[in-house]
Length: 356
Image (cartoon, rainbow, N blue to C red; front, side, top):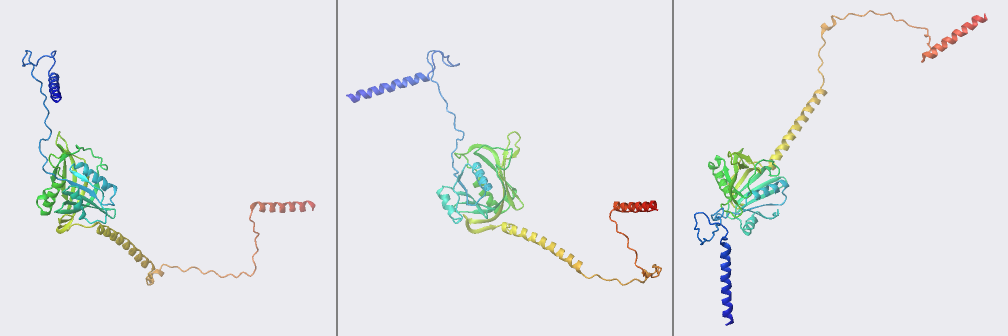
């Protein structure tokens, strides 16, 4: 019986609460009825409409990119890596990898991070930077030499874009002609393209990634699309990719393509040193030739008989032999002393004349 009473009380309380909620949702008696509605005592319930979400689609393309590097990178590479992470909302980060580890370990790291794409920065000699783009774990993968790196903090550009917005990808027409460039185009699309309806992305398109092929290199640029006139303003970062090899597997395997125009940084520095050494060697040889010319015997020209034509013989002076020793003249260094001596002589003469 006690349980039945408690249940009845609960039901009465629930009904009272429901009536109170309905009373709150209904407009007050002092408010005027809306136009076109019934003006009698019956007031229709007020309806609240919830706006639909911005993106009503479903996230199907679940591409995740792991962006990290090896140890020994400089500050510019670290800033570039951070810029790529901010521009790609579908990216993930990880700690630096030791140099002793093999590159095949990256496939396991991507599997643990639940990533199927990878951008790995490899530093060598603290001055050369290499970039690996890979589709883990099956492949293919490509290795590039990164040159002319400029980050967002370094470039003072006027462009700007929304954080997490999806970019447009613009490719050079040569990407559709050559087979190795077509493979790289598909790899770039899957890595740099933000998946539609990604949770961290924004449903706006306000910037464009451009991949241009010039001088056998791929030039990466990031531009803002201005709404008014659809003009482009550079945002950054910017870098140049010099293709080395394309592998069939992820971070290794059979070589699909090797760039014949590629020159390693070590060879480039060696050629510069050889050119400088050749210039110094040439200077030394010029100096030695000049020394030999100076030390060489001079060629004597035979005497010209016509040189004596205009010569006039000089008059011969008689030789005088002096038998008497010439009188020595007094050496007077000071003129004042000479005058004093002359005065004394004159005084003596005057005295002798006066006494006589």
